Image 1 (cartoon, helix red, strand yellow):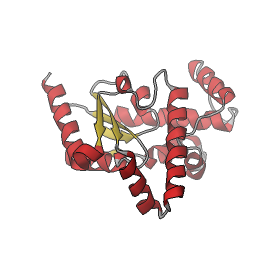
Image 2 (cartoon, rainbow, N blue to C red):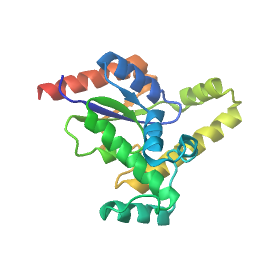
Image 3 (tube, one colour):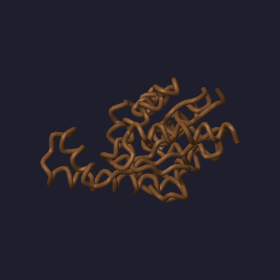
Image 4 (cartoon, rainbow, N blue to C red):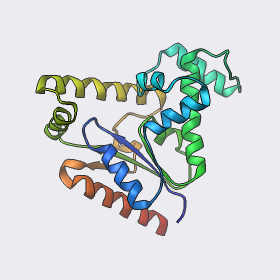
Length: 204
């Protein structure tokens, strides 16, 4: 099989992780979600707990500027601010994972970081609000008010993180190859559509 890299962006509660896991199983290729943070932590010496605390959250403008300048000029090491080291470590972790071969990666601007990779398929999973709300209430053991607030905050955080770190807009169709609604076609339907798209791409 030719090298295939599938990135999965997702609305909170849409089942994007389920799609990613099932796709990786059916294609028999590695799946990376929190594993990205683990790899970044191992490479940077910063604890994984700290990466998870700041996962997919917009950094300050100062940290972003320092990170970009440091990366451009090849500066690195313990002398960099903690936030900068974390940002660069996650970026390098994603690039390193993709270099190893076919894989499925969830979130964290992977679609943007890997935009020049051959065999890249960028997917965004959405779902109807009611289904997302029910999923969060059940999975997080929250009442409706808590779940609504959770959805609002989490999607706002992901959007801010993506929009800040890329030149695109989170969830905008023009940034993805496939935009799928899991309410309409189900988790299995999303997986099947991605596999069909990959098949067409390989033939083309």
